[in-house]
Amino acid sequence: MIVASLLLLTAAMFAFLYRVLRGPSIPDRVVALDGVLSCVVSGIIVAAAFADSGITLSTVLVVSLVGFVGTVALGRFIERRGG
Image (cartoon, rainbow, N blue to C red; front, side, top):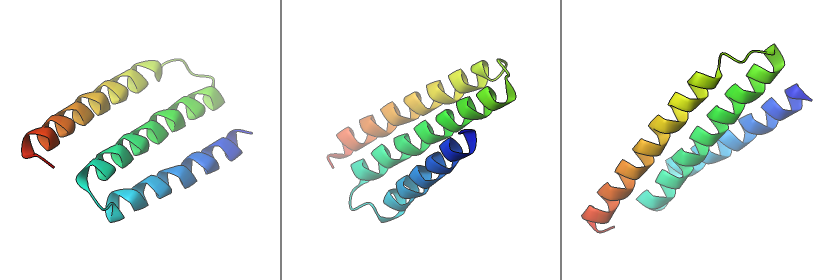
């Protein structure tokens, strides 16, 4: 079950990466980057469940907060740019 979860997360991440590279607009790319970040966080959580480790909670928290700040910063940049 863990392997299937990781495989599906990997497929979703490649789909998001495709949208990052081929996105027709900058907002599409920002949303796709947010999706990539969600896949990474979910992958860390699945790997932690597999390893039965609770120490990765701080890693997930830091990655999520950095991603949120990055998404907000990119959103403000797009808003000021007018596109």
